[in-house]
Length: 545
Image 1 (cartoon, rainbow, N blue to C red):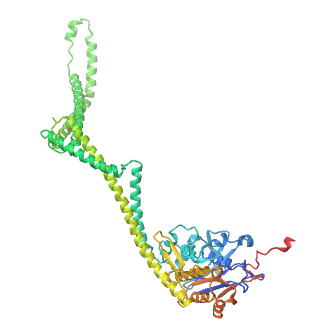
Image 2: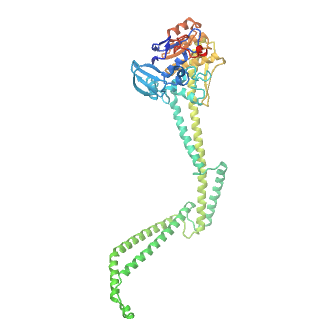
């Protein structure tokens, strides 16, 4: 827990304040009896938020404009071990790790520091973070999280559903919801992927009217197939489901036969070349017609061709062997295709136009069935998404109703302690749209609503692992004094740290004053005892003159 805070900018009557040490439960920032403003009560609470990894001390106050950048030093104790840190208002992204005299040892990124606090406070909650747990309950003027009608909100414009989700996580009930949420997300992904495929015409998209028209057309086409089969029963031996196969096989058979013919032509050429290479030289006829023919020269040329042929003979033989093998393979494929044609049940004497019509009908039926199948899938994916959405809503409703029952019963108990059962308690109600209503039953008064919010915070502090609570003085302004006394007693009864600011101590009962004085950690007042030793909302008269 936070045990001390100190800064050399915290001044009292011209001197740097001593380290401000904190109690284990209630810690009171006490203001002057005349309820003086601008003395630093809210700013000090903002400094505490700064120690708890917040940044509103810098971003939502005018401290830097008036005091300049500075360090805030603070000490935590966890399991009897002290941890010293410092944060600079100039660097919101890092925390300085220090020794006991606040000398720098190391730098820790702010996210690591948040994780450190999450671990040391033993929050042990999935799906959330340290700041998400505590920030909503650090209600300081200027942080915009103190709307008495919307106490679950961390800030006014927080996205719908987030405040309720944060409460569910704080009660450690989110695991079940996440399971159902993941199932819904998966169903939506499938549905959206299918819709996108239809949008880009990767798969067909039809209307319900077209779906019904397809059913009628499929029936008509099937009827036409039956008529064809009855009319040509002597030619057909099977159903339309093999018509496409028959057509494709016939095409393949034609292709194979053309290829085999081409190979036969090549083989004939090779055989002719081989035969010509084996021919003998015979020039008798040539000599008979041409007495002066140079037979010797012709013989020389022919011998050259013979030697060339011998060189190429192996290549011719290899080509002939290769072609013969290819022809045999093609012939085997032709036999196989012819056998497959027989298995379709169609006689090769069936008119081609009839087979093509059967094929057209079969393709059209498949097309229409595919359109209807995609329509059915689209409806199935949509129904599955809606079902999972309903399942999520149902389990979520059960969980939030259980949480609401716990909170409302505890708020009723605390409210009865304050008013002896005479006044209606605050009530939280969760709605199906992940929103909520917070009210005091039959009482819309400002004081009643603020009292309701303080009671709500006390219940959360008692019923969850929320480790700290901060309530600024403006929250108490419209609440009856005797109600504040009971609330103060509740603060002291919780074994967790509560930080509050209050002033006008004399207006409360002796019992309430005793609680406030006993738990006072810092007293602020005008005239030099403001948090920074002066109040910057005062006019500089010398400057005016």
